[in-house]
Image (cartoon, rainbow, N blue to C red; front, side, top):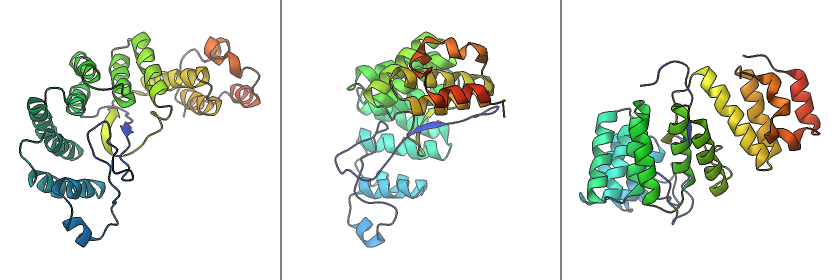
Length: 257
């Protein structure tokens, strides 16, 4: 489903806090992929499934989740995510839709269904689902990031920036999370990727995170961002004008890789 030169931003699943839950509906546990099998067998089907997911044993995870309640929106959503990881998109979509039918306000499943439409370049439908997910949940950085990505794909950079800014306000590390669960951003051409990284650099600079601003600004330059001559005068970088690292980066003027 990915065409051209692409890249991914994904949510993080860390099995550490027994009460936490990710934007995709995974319950975070205190076990990981090194947990002995005897311990795994003593756990609930859901937690056993989560362990298999951490081990990237997706079919085994599906079997475990199916051992749980067939009317659980949470488990149905997790089955969808497992199919999603195996790139079985139709089955993922079917399970996300079933999870929403079981719980119409289940924001995680609504968000995940949005990622299906996003991957299919049906950005308008994805936007509608991300907005619906936000209406059904507390403010969520990952969902705002997804919404921003959909607007960005439609070249509505104003709305994309607003959504990305909100995501950063909720979670300053939202764009730094990396894992294999829950695609947030994909299918970007080189030109779009450079523009995206420039927007991230602006937002980090505006939010007082100069180190990250410089990292993404370098990426944007290396990816061939347009109008690089205008970068020094961009108001978002006003606070970096006296930063030696900023000056050095502009002097280096990295050529597109």
